[in-house]
Image 1 (cartoon, rainbow, N blue to C red):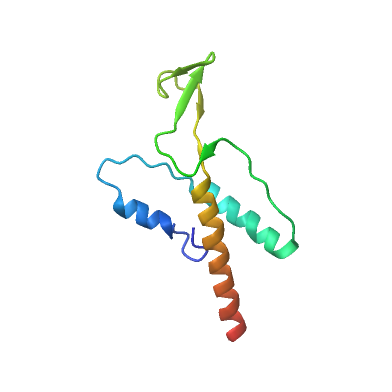
Image 2 (cartoon, helix red, strand yellow):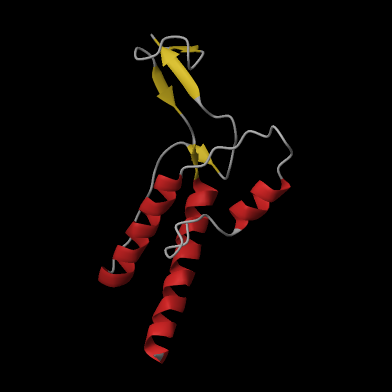
Length: 113
């Protein structure tokens, strides 16, 4: 997510452009912005972050629903079923890298003025 425009950029653009009509994609812009905020804080204050969850380097169609420990259709019982989805760690990593690159560029531009 570009800090100036708020739009997704980088590898995600190429993936979206290459996707055939009807392709299923899972995107979490809030997660991407969150890891950028964490990276910005670490850049300013030092430290490290360890993000643990289930997921992989990028998947699609990971939305699942469970009721009484059995998998169900996600829309079968609205309000009384647990929904879950895998984390796309590749998009989080890319969001951090793109965000840090953009911040460095903005910092250089500010110093040049």
